[in-house]
Length: 232
Image (cartoon, rainbow, N blue to C red):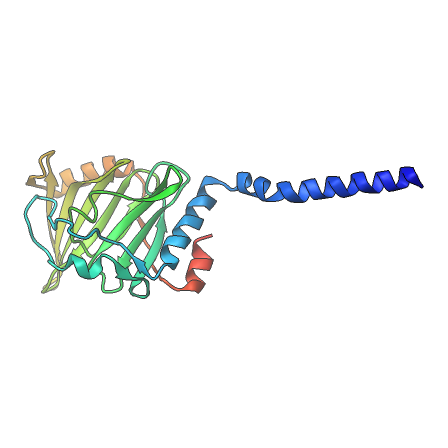
């Protein structure tokens, strides 16, 4: 009888020890992607999201001041007025989080680094573009579109490093008339813009994208249902 009681006590202690270790085991089992998604979910669940920083300089990629001058309205932005998307831009297995305003006037790209969500520089501090349109998976390359009036769009292609996004090329598309027309340009290291022909643009794009096809970004309204579905 005594041996039976001792065995039961040992069994109870073993079960209790395992139960106490389960949270720790669960924490260690989480992958970097799962940790990133959890952090993104927490960020998007707040009442506001800082897509742009207060007092951010509104600069076009060529270094000239321009764009909308109401950063305070969007930093922070009410969560109900935001949309989000997941994109594998950098060359790792942790996706980036793209957040934009419902009116498509501002966006920000965030990544998960050293246990926290980090805003990528060079997208929201140095530009006022409407939205990230697409990217080339795990190459660091993406492009956004800035729509202008009268059927004119400006697509800008970027190379993203671990700290910033640098503009590489741009395309102006005029959709007026029966056939769209295009103008191509490239940026030098100082941010100056130089016109190039279609062939030169395609050569640079193939090098930038490493020959991969573009993945078009799909956005979701920032709702609890979508966060649960996408950010998991």
